[in-house]
Length: 491
Length: 106
Image 1 (tube, each protein chain N blue to C red):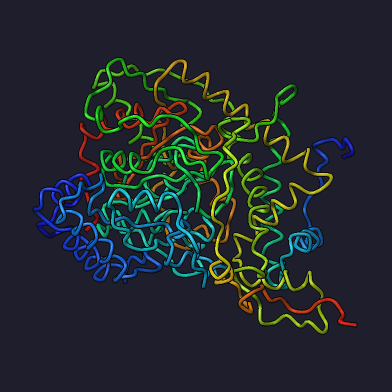
Image 2: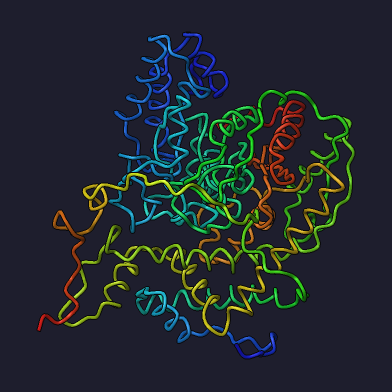
């Protein structure tokens, strides 16, 4: 919608739709036109169902015409990561395994978005089954970073991030298991929030690593992220891990600066492997907080250096179990090559899974099968669960001294497509700053805090204690209000 | 398991990966195996650094936000109707999921 007279943020759009200044259909048409014009280059979407999009928008306009009260996301186009079920739409997880899958029901989040009168606007590309940090692991297409089409948008929610950064939709839904909202948000110069584990129901979300997965908003402003979180947070009995805790009004106090804010900075975050330009931008952001009256305190997170190793035991272990369901019997890819005369049942499953999954998914299933296998589970899996508790304890201690912790979101700005694809371990280290929040279950977000000399966005990560989203968003808004990085858009 | 010294952890070789693939019901072609096993060996080598962390007396943490006994009322709800449940099956006959015959008919 950039370049037109239509409002661009979700807050503005929903206000304009409610006031009758613009219709939901006009807004949806603008989003579809922007996708039509730009997505050939960016490749953020794997599927856009024009009729369904306009159908949702028409219903919103009809509600208004009938004098009904409109929801908090009235008429706002929202890109949906292709692993959150919407009945009637494909849900491929960007995998050959689910190429033809049509979910028989909708995710709780999809229901809530419709109840809020949002307009789901397409299925966003992702790393296959959310495993990756560049969206290059998609079996469908490779999404480009709108700031530089030769660079990766990050991942796994790379399609969602690129859709927002390119101005196709003001909002997108992402998921974050080890940084999959925050890392692409940082790479694409937008704001992405991973809420507290259990804050948002995962009913109807295709599972990757169930003790870590969380759904969250991706947006161009902190207020838009807060607006979406408000709509999707809350208890749902269909997800046993979903927290039955009241949802605060995230927008009511958003613009009020926090007095006596204590910003924690951890020395261990500014070590070898961190790009000098990213380091400088993040430390300058800390100075901005100082200038706003915040107190900056040193905190220790001595076990954070083990987060990546811990993650690459826990997440693959859970994935190897979760993805066991894809056997080609009830749904998913079934091989044509199976020979029932000469091959056994195990070979039937092996062929279905061997053809249906890509390299990264295979690597993680193999890794998880290994770390859980007899003889190794104590050494790897149980040890990783103990280190996970130590990581969490570090945060509990740190948040006694500060309200939020400021750190880089990623060690570098966006890398080139193809640069890391043959070196999985180097790719994994991209998540060195984001994973710890998933381990501890705490909320964390990334927002724009500068650009490299080459014009690539840099992300500031802020994290806070369990269920402290209100404080986290207010702290983020303080920085956003004092800077203009978030207003810059790719050419 | 045997209390093998942590520093002596076995490296993952090509044959190990082939065996794990069988356990995981994943068919790997020879070229895939050639490509993937050294990557896995490198990743396993990396995660082995966790052995150096002193975790004596630390309880394993299985979930991010630890809650116990999450209960709900046991109320019957509508289940997925058969046609919807079968709709995504690679093969079905309208009543059942169809799979290749793997048990000898005799």
